[in-house]
Image: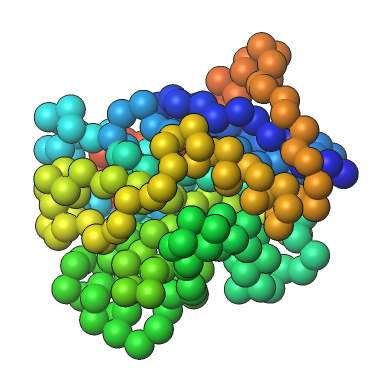
Length: 256
């Protein structure tokens, strides 16, 4: 079945997570696999599905209007979405071995960055744990696991996380572009990874990623299909699931 491509959307975090939950339900109901890229309309801290602890200063940053909070349906640690590009894909992988699924579903990203002269390799090597201890374990980008893509100098460019529902996969990933240093320090108490600029502007980056996905992920052209008014009405019902009350401990969200 051809993959669906939803053109990039800029929206609040609750809306973005509602779309992704809805897409997984559509796949379960017999819909097509789907890939989309998107941006966040305000700086947003997304928490992984099972991430329980909120850093004590995060509620103050929310009250100051500097960030909003949302919970992802996928796993992993907190990701600051500010000057980044997020991808989401839903599909039926050939197998359910998670590391193999990461490898298969990230080839398109590796090929795209290799063409830009910035090759990416898998994280999870020696020393990752020490880096995490130094930079705080609440941040996804504080360490690089075998699910993440890093540059040769160890700087993490892309962090990915999964949600499995039987043999169905929802995978999220954040591509760091130009992370805001001051806000990153205020959120995580440490600077973001030091990354070289990419040779593309926003539009060219999206074109490059789509072209790479068609060759290395989707096995053919993506079928462009924006969300219809009827689909938006269905998605609206999912938005409350992506919202979260602020508390010292954040509990997992119910399944959408």
